[in-house]
Image 1 (tube, rainbow, N blue to C red):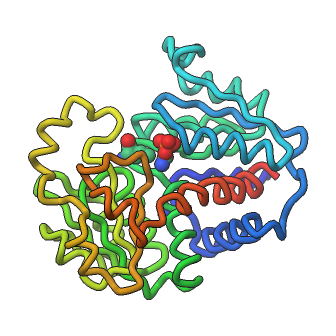
Image 2 (cartoon, helix red, strand yellow):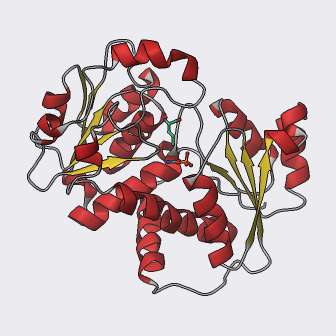
Image 3 (cartoon, rainbow, N blue to C red):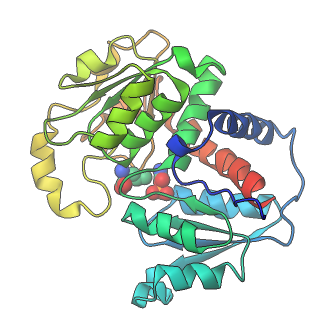
Length: 302
Ligand code: CP
Ligand code: NVA
């Protein structure tokens, strides 16, 4: 029987030792210890049904650096954008390329693509999860605090969105303490929260200051994610007390850092003095997207 292909869709469903191996591989790629063109002759299709700067460019640049090639497919210029089914797209692309990365709205669409494709599928963000980003965030934490993530205290301030869900999955896998501060009605996915609670010290609070107390990492994200643009005004009211500012950062551990997946709205979810201040690691974090996706590509496509 052929071994089942590996996908990278949901870190909660991936063995922790494999995730650790990816983080270790990320370090070896970033340091230059691993180099060369191991993906020579290999092609990745990248389906983007939502906008992207970091995910698209880091993935395409990563494929180039590893000797391979990436093809961008958007709704505007492909048949999937005109209603061709995910199943047919998966079957056709599997005959041309060695892996598929997809960014889309519904998480089910990625799961379906992975079921129908015979090549590995990478989740480049859904409404539910953003696994490549949280791996880059974890790698940034490793650079700051060392390989053992289990003793970390992480504070998520703001929307219980795809990034909050991804941090919950990370807490579940690595066992660190996670405090989420979000307004009532804007919490994370209940199923993902319940699973994380079964494996880690996780609490949902209403106070950003309380959540940030003693934190090694304070992190946040936009108040309205892609697809929620119409809710911006309502969300600005709901999230008014959930901004990461100097008062919130003052509660963190003295070594505590600030992370944000970007893009950011200065003056909304984070003040400019925090995101542009000495404790911010957001550009190191953004750079790490490149090293992490190279590790994933090397493992899945190499
Ligand atoms: N953080 C992140 O995924 O950025 P992009 O939306 O620019 O890809
Ligand atoms: N939560 C944000 C993340 C962007 C990288 C969104 O989904 O729009």
